[in-house]
Length: 267
Picture 1 (cartoon, rainbow, N blue to C red):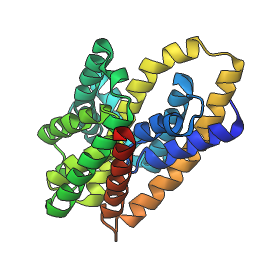
Picture 2 (cartoon, rainbow, N blue to C red):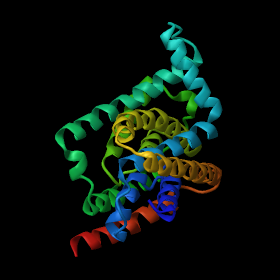
Picture 3 (cartoon, rainbow, N blue to C red):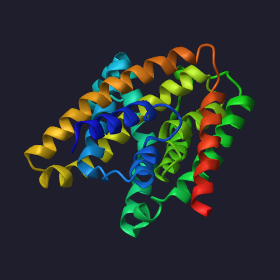
């Protein structure tokens, strides 16, 4: 695959994975709107691995605590802070895994990859994010995250498997609707991405790697590195901007793009 194509894919994934604008939607739109070759499953997995590295590094303290929590759960230490965080992340991941399997088994995952679907989800969930952000209270922090909220956020996150919804966007929407502050709700949403990306990467990566050749693995490595660097920059900028800016700029982008896509789809 040409280097420029890899760079474009990596930059799109890196920027959009953690912003509430849907990375999968943009990756689907790229070949549909530009005529570029579809990047294939291996590159999709690679850029997701790159963004996974970025979120783990940026939230290293919490990430390290969550991974330690897995060891605590295995060894029967269920009441430690690490075990608690790991448990909440697992609970928040289960709905997405179940919904993802349903979409895969029924074939709906392929049928939903259309400009029409992405246009509607961009528009509708952009408006939902705006309402939740503007009307939601800001009384809860990460320390208030509990079992019930983890399950609820997991259900919100499962909706993101519909292309164009945005995993980070819908998780942030759910967090704001439940009263979490912008910064803490976003942080929880970012941490929730770790097990989801690992799960989807493992599920799709086995097949992709098994059928890859040396050139494909090289392209995947290049894409992963650039996605990592771009995602780290985008994540850092967004977390800083949240101190003074709401999610309205992202909402405007989603609504405008959604209207344009629907115009294309129905023309």
